[in-house]
Length: 418
Image (cartoon, rainbow, N blue to C red; front, side, top):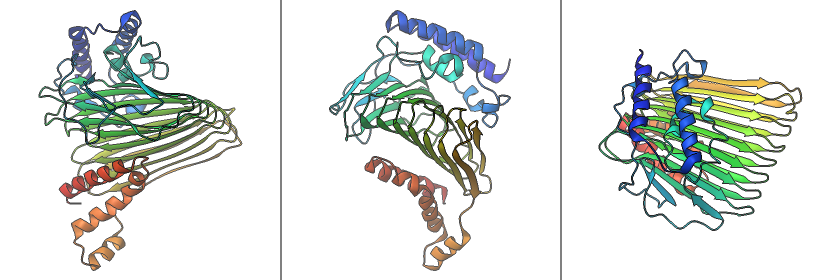
């Protein structure tokens, strides 16, 4: 039996020990079917094309306690959240919600799994098998919400656990809102497995911006599955910022199901030490007159490794599609590595599509220019790296986030001597 097979058996044993029971018959059915799906699929291996560059060996080495089922104390986030979860369980206390927004719990689970079926992804199956709580966010039809809706998911405690955030976002027709999902470590103890599933419905003429922050302990394993579907003239914008984690895998899919739908996917990731950060994206142009724009930037330091696979699918009837994709990467040290594969799959003939990637080091002429003006080399390298990342951070739809994340990045780069 391989290490991953043994890890799967330990996770199934945790499920038996946890015996989640809240939520009624419908939720119990979801859990039961998801457990069977996870048992059948197992954990992905590098023999699978989608996981070819990402070895789950760090997950196999985790020694996890069963998921928490009761609320625990949690250090508050820097900015008060509208809902806070500790180890996947909702905590007491929350900021008042903006008008036009409601946040419910698990409910009967009937609206979960529509965009992220357990049978199609082993980590979605694992999340659903342990389904205990959820944040179901709905923006009412026509609501124009200026205040960001903030969801805080923290790992806490001295014992590493399996933590499984579950989020459902629903933007009703003609609504507009921004949602910030903060997945953070709030403990000195590492070795957690955080496995999040986020399903997003953007209905006709709605506009939704989602900021996904991943700030994890250097020993944590993080898996996030984000699945979205957009209606007619709907607009989705995602900002994924990953700063830390021993092994991070982000799967993001967007289905443009209504004519005139648009999506914009932006990402920034920093892999240092022996970190592995893997971003897999899929944009599915299912109907005509869709537009997508994708920009992911990677910063790789020390022996950090990044993976980017971006797939754009244009279906036969999706004429007049306009799609672009770009993945520039910056290598700061000789041991850093990036595996990048932007991919277009086009089955229509009246489209405008482009894609590309770039891998490089800091510009020696720019370094010389800064050194000539009295800036020492470590500071010059840090300034140029910050400039590379600034396009993503400056584009965040919440100004204070760009500033705080820029400071966090500055501290990380300073510690690296870059």
